[in-house]
Image 1: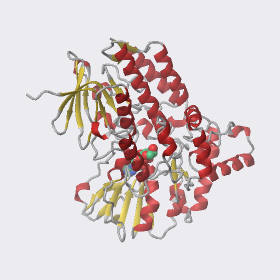
Image 2: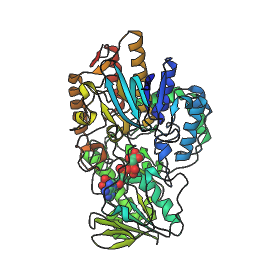
Image 3: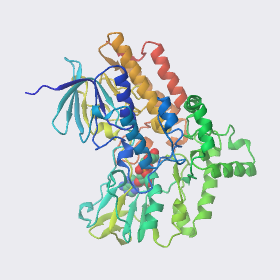
Image 4: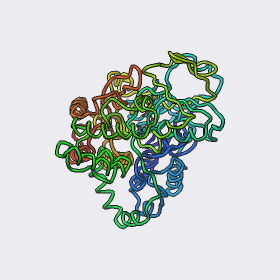
Length: 532
Ligand code: NA7
């Protein structure tokens, strides 16, 4: 029998976190292999090629900070980078640091089993390779496993069905086509205005209306960039401290709606609306905890939707009835305006649900709609989907699927009790999607790298979260989340978008206190972990 190839570290995924993890492991002089299902680097930016795909975080902060020359040299043309610009950047990073030679592309990890005797992870891939490593690092992304809804008759449709996160690399011809888009999350809101311009007809099937605000994308101001680059390190440090709900270097205002008159509230909201993007959600300091600030902000956006959309019945359908910022906020470029076009229709799935997909189109409870192409903008099995698709087994054969049957228990979002030497980058239980992903990823990768360095220099073979620390951590995440308005609606933070998924709040609100906690854990000899 062929013996398994041995590595110090196996990293699953060559997205933003996998690339940086590989860089860090090399710095420690370890042998590391990255296994990537895609044909190139980039993770989410490799897969999500739908029309209009862009990041919703400013370029100036959606980039690595670990290398001063890299951050000084790279030039971003626009406020929000397109998918292809980010992919170019990540390809450049892979080349610049010569990372590709340790990445195995077009290979999917299917199983990982902890061998207690050898104290190593055995990793199995879809090409039948057998690999082992002392450390296994899951850099599989928080928003990476597509949610393909089960709709009767899907396979009978005569035309193509494309999920936004699996968009064909060669592009899709839209001219002259009758197109359906199912879903109205970030991906749909970005794609819809672009598809509407090209397609003959576009019909949007909406389950939940969306709170969306203008991105106000624009070319980057060179003076602003020069100012940031004169002290990029200082900018990054402030960014880490302020990186909160508004996901922007522009901090939230330091007052609440309750402190202002009606007129002042409107003025502040209008100023923030003109800034565009996530800063809008920082008009008041407490939009995610105060119902009054939340309602003031929501009422303002409701009025904007009514003012933009010509048909009052369509405007009503597009207006959300739940707390704003409760689902992850969406930024748009002409989303609501698109519904004024004569070739665009909106179908409210709450009133008329989809019953089946037919060879010629989609049948709702009310009508048959004919299409040439169906776009599933139905999102992801967020935070746990990519991890649970792999058959991961820890001590005593315990599977992660069993361990997480009631929701993703973990410690610091970094480790799961019973799974020694396995780390999750931006895993559930860490701030991840509630902060700038770049900032969250760098902090996690650096923490894990330092932990591995510590273990090697102190001759520790294994690190494992204790059961007690894990129970306390899960309680803490729930306590923090339950004090916010994020639990006041149906959202994917709680798994509400996936039928049957346990309803548990997965990300941890509050990045700076989380970093403090991680640093305290280290200062106290890795408190909550068992080192052996
Ligand atoms: P999202 O934000 O999860 O949006 C998915 C959308 O698809 C959302 O409107 C869902 O409605 C809708 N959906 C999901 N399943 C169905 C079914 N079965 N039928 C009809 N509609 C459905 O994913 P995106 O790709 O747009 O964005 C992902 C992240 O990328 C985003 O948060 C940013 O971080 C960037 P729902 O709201 O669940 O009722």
